[in-house]
Amino acid sequence: MPIQVKSEIGPLKRVLLQRPGRELEHLTPIELERLLFDDIPYLHGAQEEHDCFAELLRREGTEVVYLDELTAEAIGSDPAVRSCFIDDFILASGSTAQAYRAELREYLSAIRDPLELVRTTMAGVLTEEIHALRYSALSDALKGEQRFLLDPIPNLYFTRDPFASIGNGAAINHMYSVTRNRETLYASYFLQYHPDYRGRVPLYYRNADAFSIEGGDVMNLSERVLAVGVSQRTSPEAIELLAGRILSCAQTEIDTILALYIPSMRAFMHLDTVFTQADYDKFVIHPGILPNLRMFSITRGERKGMHVQELEGSLEDVLKRYLELDSVTFIRCGGKDGAIASQREQWNDASNVLCIRPGTVVAYNRNNITNALLRDNGIHVLEVPSSELSRGRGGPRCMSMPLWREML
Image (cartoon, rainbow, N blue to C red):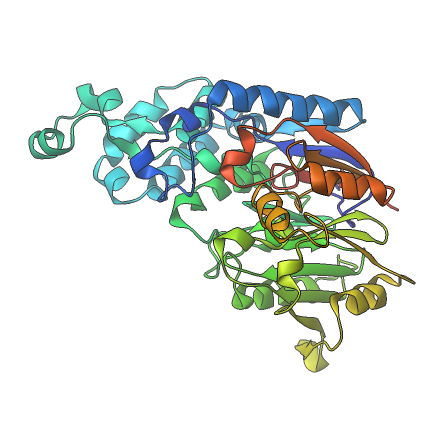
């Protein structure tokens, strides 16, 4: 199997990243809200920081692969697959792209290098780039040539969300926002057509499914237990659909899905923005989720159905029970007494650490209070620069999709 992710903390041996590209330079202040950004990162700085992140992972023994390169390899060897990719991408890109479908298809088809083609779809296509192929007097006069026929996709460096590794399988997600839904095409194509993955990865969810689910809400807590956050971006209907497919699959060891309901708000966008695992029994948590947290277990029911039960007790109790732990330590983002520090550092993704082996995590260097608390609790913290990357509202876990973790 090319995917093996059966924990959050097993030694990380292969991970999928995406280096920020020209799509960040295509962000403008007027489009920030629609494209789900709060600020405009400086591309050169973001690339330098991302390269530091990738190099740190390599030094720690992790193979780094890139989304654009895997997708290019998947579509580059078969003209029919390449053609379908172009058609699917235009179809997923909205009404303006549909109005210019023929011109966009001609423009993209003329890009012979598959990697350049993939990166062009990521960066976006302006009217002026295909102006010679078509002139629209009214729309060009009113909107000008500085408009996008294919929007840029600036969130791509957060590879955690468009799909999720689950055991030896994967979920190709249906994203919450129309802006991000095209991101799932890249994962869909490399999982289905890349020679290393084709026919070897069970798919528990597909981007054509109706309900939204994003990878930041999916956590492989153990071989048998999967946690999924019910959040702003992931609906309970999606979790039920995912759980039903997992529990009915003979190839999986997962027998329990824990649904954790967190407040539906941008600051708590995904489960992993408020809760991540750092060691066997240690978790980083934003305390703001605890008062209103509701928890449910989903297991196999009679006649191949599902049994859903709301769980009593605290999150600590639930983790001890399902992970068979004697005790659990919560490391509070920003510290126990720092309400301001907690909110500030959570906004800068202090809770969003990437565990690369038990007791070792990668964290943003800006979150000095939480990082010090991690060290006080025996966690080895590897810091990466974050002045530009953090502007996208995602941390090291958000920026990485594990493809292979060693078994514990």
